[in-house]
Image (cartoon, rainbow, N blue to C red):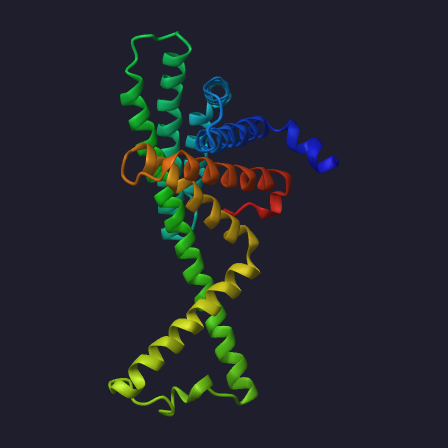
Length: 259
């Protein structure tokens, strides 16, 4: 209960709840359309989705300044790759929120002459760039953790007097250049890498949640920009999953990837 009270007190919490409800409406509307629901009910769901979207834009007013402040803090990170990925991501988020504010002004009637289609395309383009930077940062952190885990495993094997499984160093699977050994060795290395990746992600829940959330969010701008049409059902499902994960990181701050 205390966690929920802290969650509801945060300014981002209401926006995340509205986002989850919006994409739930998108998923529900797609399901109703597939099952032949009445047009009136489908219209009501679409209207509710539109109202939630407009409410989210109102709640995000001023988020550009927050994103710029986050970018200023990221500039001082010691790791060059993290500094680049996080800073560029926050700058794109700031531009995305700025375009979103213009869209809110157009949809609310404050600026009726705004070309909403053009500004929507701009906002989703900046959103896509931000997600690409986030996933690049995730991939970099995964590579570092896999290297650390691999080194730790090698030290443990040397300390216990063990060797590489399957005799890959002694030629048990054949020489690397021979047809007899090349393919089995490649399959073994791939299997070991997959197991290592699973172990790293299992041992670092914040990184795992960030990867899943960014991967789900990626489908939204790809669909809106026409780069990969996946349909309202997939967009609604991915948006709902990423929203739930975002809410989870607000309720449990230790699940948020840092820095």
